[in-house]
Image 1 (cartoon, helix red, strand yellow):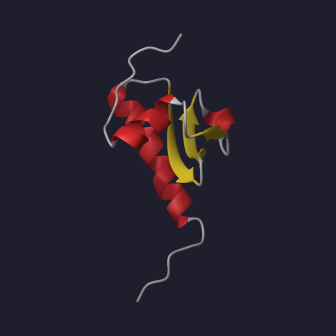
Image 2 (image 1 turned 90 degrees about the vertical axis):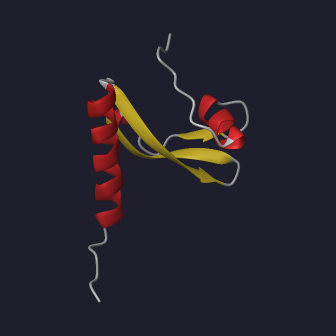
Length: 79
């Protein structure tokens, strides 16, 4: 039995955003989790680094639409 450090989960999901940004050649990346009727930015990197903890309504958001459809949706450009 091995006990993980308290911040292990946060470190792993933050690494995930860094790698996602790297492989997609993106300027920023975020990992969101559903919390009730909201999406919460739990890990961020790059141009989204300022958005850690941001809460968006699940309904009516791009990520919420992907979550509801249970599909990956690719957004190539944000205006």
